[in-house]
Length: 366
Image (cartoon, rainbow, N blue to C red):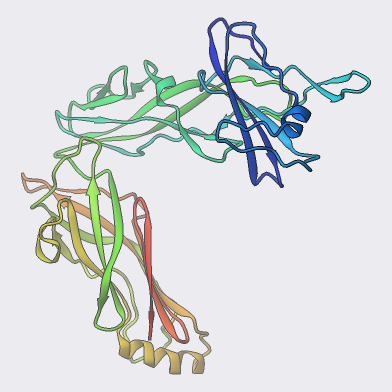
């Protein structure tokens, strides 16, 4: 392979073997027009270690390879060159590797919450089709951001949004990236991203994570949630309150059941860094999820008798809002809400929270 660009670049070459589970990696700085020649047979015979000290197996006979431009992340300068497949007779073949480009380009936050007369940042990720990992490609979007209504929000070169008036608009950006391709070429393609931008009366959480705290009343799970925003604001002392993003579901209930049918959230409220989570900054809880022991025992006996198989359970869709210091409320969860589930199995129960940014479950033997 070689450097077809006009500046030095750091080139990476990797041999993948054992069905792709093992990797031998080399790196080299290539000057413009300089090439990197690799004799794989010599690497094997002489047990030459890679950058991590790993040598190729002596009996290795097959595998695949990849090249990567580590300097030019978005639009690379490397070319593949030729592959010698029969050194004895000097036969050569042009390489025919496919392009490990990008596809999909979601924004970091959609919607992005921006406090009135305050600021919030955004960015863009894209999926690397070879590694399967989401890469931060925000650098390639700088200078390309805009908002549909600058009277509500404006955005600068580095994607920092400023709230001008309370309301909602749309932010957009684009990047020129290498696109995934099965052909031996790497086309440069336009990748655009857009999402909602909501200017709010106060700073509101942009992310919320959940974690299991413990067991309550034998069969319920206590969860603790932690909220953040892009500016690192402190939400301690503010009140959060749950509502229903959608109607609840109950697959255990049957006509004539002595256990009330689950229909949704109860409308609980919590103080951030208060009550049961006092001393835990930006945390609220406990949010308790589960069935009562009596309901579990009842449904294990009665649900099958009424044509309902075990496991069965409940599902709730929890919206969350936070109270601003001026007394107004603002919903910070996505329209689908957080999903809460409690499943009754033959010998245990499983309680889960699928929150904005992660999920947590607990299995209780009962």
